[in-house]
Length: 370
Image 1 (cartoon, one colour):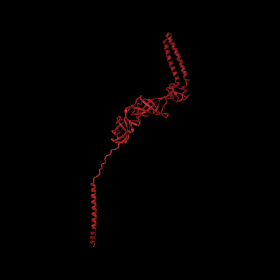
Image 2 (cartoon, helix red, strand yellow):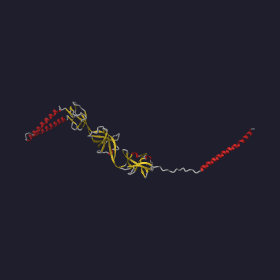
Image 3 (cartoon, helix red, strand yellow):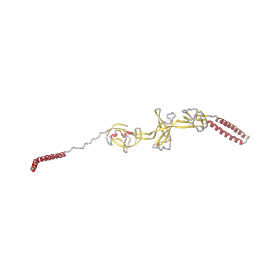
Image 4 (tube, helix red, strand yellow):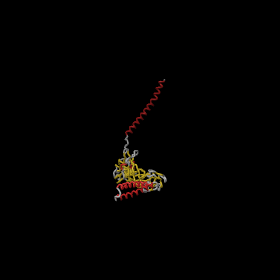
């Protein structure tokens, strides 16, 4: 009974199964044929015709060398007085009076301090009297010996006595003169170290005088630059005076033989006339120094130079195209820099638009300057 049922179901399902298989086969064949037909169709060209890039707008400067270019640099410096003199007493005495005041201008030979002379003057008077007496005695003995009225020995004794009394007189006069303490230089009485009535001994400092009519500007020049300078070279001093910048010229008067071990810089002194009183001791100023003068120097704007991994380059225009030039740099002057090699006179240097260029790219000059 079950076998008959199974055979009946098989008989009924076979035609439908065949139809489904046939349908799938037809669909597969049709799809394969479509793929083959599409593959055999001519393919459109994938090559895009090249288009030329539009020229880049640039600004150029025609290279014109400068006949002479001063290679200068500026360093900070300090003003110092030409001399600071400490004046000391040479005699032991009390101070009688002090005519000048601190801050007064004094000339060489002006009286700074007057010491009392009540003890020294009597000694001077005694020495003077002895000297005059011995001089008279000498002249008398000269006359007697000449007339053969006295032996030569008496004249010799008179000569010796006159020399001794003269020495004593000159010593007493020098001691009296030293009671007047005078200024050894012209300058400003910067400090009075004693008071009237004070007793001083030889060597006691009584005053300090600063000479500022001539001043020194001390500047430390780096080791790489010191070789350019020598004594007698000019230097320009730039100072702020009452809110305005003043320029004064001076000369190098001293170059130290010893460099600073820490900074490797060499102290240099520049001396200049300060009779107008523009500079003060301790003032910070700037010094403009000139290393050398460069002939036929080529200067270009700093912004025209392109830094590379292994150097620097610029772009120039040649036949309406941008050409890259490797350059060697020199000194910087403001917003310009010297090109030592890589550029020639009359080259058209690109100064604007060069950041967007590649070598050989077409360019269009919008503006040109010299």
